[in-house]
Amino acid sequence: MQISGRHALVTGASSGIGEALAVELAARGAKVTVAARRVEKLENVVEAIRKAGGEANAIRADLALPGSGLELARRVREDFGHVDMLVNNAGVSGGVSQFLEKSPTEIRECIEVNFAQPMALTHELMPGMVERGFGCLVSIATASVFFPTNLASVYIATKRALVSIDEVLRIELAGSGVHVLTVFPGPVDTPMLTKLMATDERAKAVLGPFKGTTDKLAKLTMRAIERERDSVVYPAQFGLGRWVSPIMGTLMARLSAPLGLNR
Ligand SMILES: NC(=O)c1ccc[n+]([C@@H]2O[C@H](COP(=O)([O-])OP(=O)(O)OC[C@H]3O[C@@H](n4cnc5c(N)ncnc54)[C@H](OP(=O)(O)O)[C@@H]3O)[C@@H](O)[C@H]2O)c1
Image (cartoon, protein in one colour):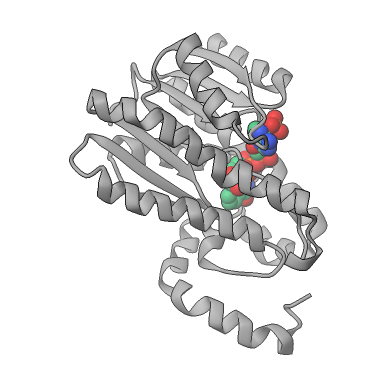
């Protein structure tokens, strides 16, 4: 799909991957609306885009709140016009802890931000894309869906739910002109990864050497949008996950106690 002249809504664009995606979309001629909680950071992104000659606006949204996806979809349409590209990027880790140690609040927040509100946004904004005969949904999932590990149960579950919706939408929307792209980032240098690595030594040791950049991921995502690809996996080594994924759960469960991976 051609990016120039389209209107894109990017959630979680106040930092990291979302910010890089917003900047790249604008550089390719899209009008971009950025959404997140931290207004000051959003305004910085808008300013940087405008300085570079692009068009951007910001809307504050807290996607941990039930109903916030619907409200954001309506506001963006009213204030800035119909949305051609929805980038469901906002995400939280759900806490780096075993499932039984997570608080109900952490679990609820993770489900709302990573899955429930993205689904609501899609449900509200996609009918317009279908009506117009073109549009694009980009879901920022994670390569962790291929590698179930401890400490990330709810995070992985919410991202797998996103991936599942995308798979079915691709079937239901075939021939509609609406394209669905799922992005599977491995470790990418952002505040979220920095925080994870500061909390989890094992993650730091395993993921650190493979760490990629937001800039590269954003460029690969733009290419996948333009070529209407189904998925992007970055860094590329994590593409191996697609093949080992069917046995990873069993393997990890068997090795967990002997190797002390269950702590
Ligand atoms: N970095 C990685 O290694 C990696 C790997 C796999 C997948 N991902 C995924 O990539 C996406 C972006 O993460 P990132 O790494 O770029 O982390 P990040 O820099 O921490 O960005 C997370 C974004 O989500 C927004 N957000 C969080 N809670 C929100 C809420 N309640 N309402 C609205 N927005 C909210 C944050 O904005 P505010 O705080 O301003 O609200 C921020 O803009 C996430 O979905 C993440 O799961 C990242």
